[in-house]
Image (cartoon, rainbow, N blue to C red; front, side, top):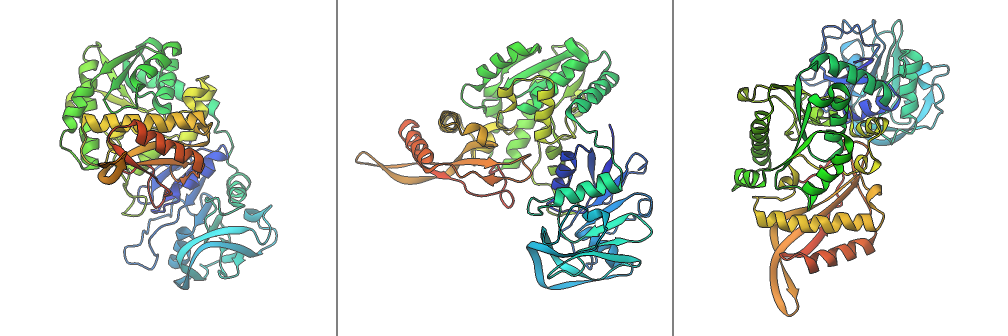
Length: 510
C-alpha cells in the first residue's frame, strides 16, 4: 500500500478529520501515535503533526524525537505541533489571556508564501487552544496573523517546516482544504493517485499474494462494510471465500431474510445461520455496554468456530473492519482520541480458533468504502444503507436484553426507518435508529393510566461517522412517527427525539 503522508497523532479530537481531508485530495495517509513513529519512513513524502489536549508547558506533554523527520521531510505542524516547535526550539509559549477557541479571520498574510497561495486575507479559520505562541522558534518567519493571534502561522527557514495555530481540517476553516493542498501537492509534491480504482487493483493483488489458495470465512452483516469486503475478496480468491450471515437475534425486523435475498444475485457463496437463541442466552442479565459487546463478540467467535469446522482447511477469518473502528480502539496517551468503545471486529482471536485475520478495508473511511463498492458495481441500494452497529440492537437497548425488549425495538425501528423511506428522507440521513430507554413513564390511553417504555429516535448527518450533526427532521414527520409508534407498538407510550451532535455525544447511546 502506498504511504504518502504520515500523520502523527498527539491526541486531538480532530486528528481523524485531518486524514479525511487528505484523502479527499486523493492522497493516501496513515495516522500513528506520536510515540510510535515507524522506523522506516522512506516511503513517506510529508508529515503532519496533529493538535492535542495537552499543553506543551506541562511536564507530561508529548515530546517525541523528530530528528529523523525534521529537515528531511516537509512538515505541517497544526496547533499543538506549532506550539511544540516553538516551545522546544528557541521560542516561547504562554497561557493565553483569553482562551482562543472558535472562529477567527486571517488579518495578515505574508506575500508570496506557498502555504497560503490562493488564500486571501479575512479568510475564516478555526482556533482551539488555551496556550499561544509569544515568541517564534529559532530561524522562523511569521507568515500569518489574526486580530487576536499574532503568530497564527510561521515557517522555519532552511527547511520545509510550516506551522499553524488553527485547524485547517475542520469545515469552519473555509480555505483549510486549499491550505492542505498547497502543503501536500505544491510544497511536498505528493502525487494525487489515491482513487477507488487504484485501491481495488492494489488490494485485490495484495489479497491474492497473501491468501493464495487458502480458504477464507467471512461474516456478512448485510451492511456496506462486510459486503464490500466480500466482493473484494471474491475478486481475489473466488470460490475459496465462504460467507456466513448470522442471525444474532438483534437484527432489524425481517432483516435476516431480506439480506439473504439481497445476496443471491451477487455471486457470493453465502450461508445463513440462525443463532438468535444462542446470543440472547449469552446476553441474559448483562446491562453494561462493554460487557454486552464482549458477550456478543464471544458468541460470534463460537458460531464462526462451529461453522468454520464444517469447511475443511479454512485458514483466514475476514472482517469488515474500517479505519474509524481501528482509530476508536487505539488510545493515544489518554487524550480525546483515547479508546471510546471496543469494537467486536477489532483485535485478535482466541488461540482455539486457529484462524488468521484478513481485513481488506481497515484503512478506509466509510465514504471511501462506498466509493470502492460503486467502483466494483455493487448495487446503489446496498451501498446507501445506513450504518448499523455490529452488536445490533443490543447497544440500542439500554440495560439488560430480553426477547420482549428486542421485539419492541424492532417494531419501533421498523416504523421509523420505513417512515424515512416513505417521506423520501432516508437518503438525506447518514444514520438513523431507535433506542429503547431503561425507564418507563406515565401515560393515558383511552381512560386508563399506563406506565410503559420510552423510546428515543436518532437521526444524524455525517461523512464518515467521526463527527455528526443531528438532522432537523420535519415536525410533521416526527409527529406522525410518534403517533404511529405509540398506537401500534404495545409497551411504548412516549417518544423523544435526540438532538445531540458528535462530539460531545456519540452516534450510538452505548
